[in-house]
Length: 354
Image (tube, rainbow, N blue to C red; front, side):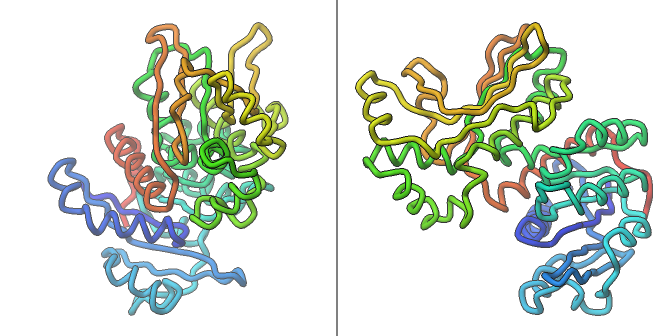
């Protein structure tokens, strides 16, 4: 099955997507009868100028990647490059699928939110790694995609390679999930582990995380618990059928943890972890993020370093625990390929042809 695909965003994730499609094309066709044909790519530069490449016959991905790496933009693609705006290309490409990987905007979800709305309105299936639109408008977008009869997948935006959303969507189908809890941020977990293992201060552990490329230059969203809150919010609304808003989440982080706290916990055989939890209650769903002191019987006790984990408490299947690894552009792109396969197998593609 040939799937005409538009890449919106061509940064690290978009390039990783292209590399995976190029590398695995034969495997995907042989095992899944899936031919992801990229017909267009569009990005913006630091000045807000659009750069695009489009061909109804499909772009050569090797050339597309090389063009980006040598010229800096996809608009230099031979004979097919241009400066078409992202919305114009979404509306005119007649692609069946949009893979959206523009940078996350935590103020209003743009431009990803508008991209997703436009693609769904044009009858495209959508896969995104962008958590911004999900924080502000997830349930609206899910309803819109259902009304339009096309798929909308976003597991790459929630802990990347750890399949939290697909597990809830497929493996826990029919289950009433009463609680979701998890270690959802690798940076904070690495810092707590480093403080415990080496006796480092929080500042020294953070510096080590930054040196290794684990922590961002500005790590406040990770340290203060908000990245965990964003992921938990999306998982809760997706899997527990909720409509929780960001202001409903009680958030605290690891910024005040001290070596004294670490040592006192260790005397009892305990560890500190930053845990996000959404739990059903008589009044709805209680949702919070914060430091918790856990003992050796807790399923997260051995989840150290950059590893993440999530636990579902269900009525039908009991306790289900997932353990996953680090986040990086390649793994995020891999999660988007997973979502693409699920979307195709669920027959939720648009029926347009380029």
